[in-house]
Length: 215
Image 1 (cartoon, rainbow, N blue to C red):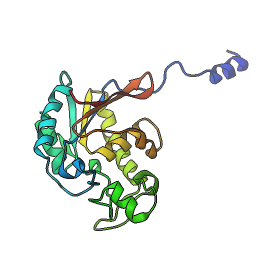
Image 2: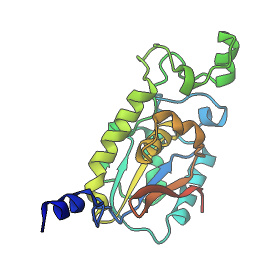
Image 3: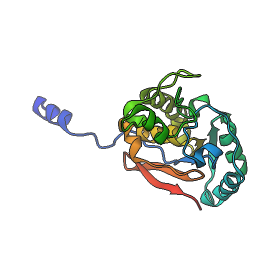
């Protein structure tokens, strides 16, 4: 091979891309609580499921029908743990990085209530939270937690499907990270209580295969 041939070969794209896991990453949002029903921000407050939330969590069994998991991780908060139990999932590990966004001083308050106090069109993604009984988190801090979860489970996805049981905002932000988007892309992903999302790959590209699946 001449020097010219070698230089030309070096400029060609590789024949194969990075290794891509075949397993799916399945996300489960917990069932309904009193605060989620009334639109109140529920971060670290450990609320139980409503009876309707327990019923919806049981219905997740059908949404997961036919799926087998090599690993299940769950937020340690009660509403997530109870959802996993009712959905028939055996939790392998409780992961504090899967807890919901720490809303700080906006914990327990609705968006409408916060906007009325501030006098402008507040959104959690655009304007963030304030300290309260807890310090609160930026969206970037929530994304960093999601990134850590993804790093932990990536090797397992080469063995099969992995399930994460958690909370609306935190799982939406984790999904944005998975899709290689900025954390605030999560504002475009609504995730209903008691529903399932499925993340995978098309060739080398991370994709959403299903979203807000209930049964």
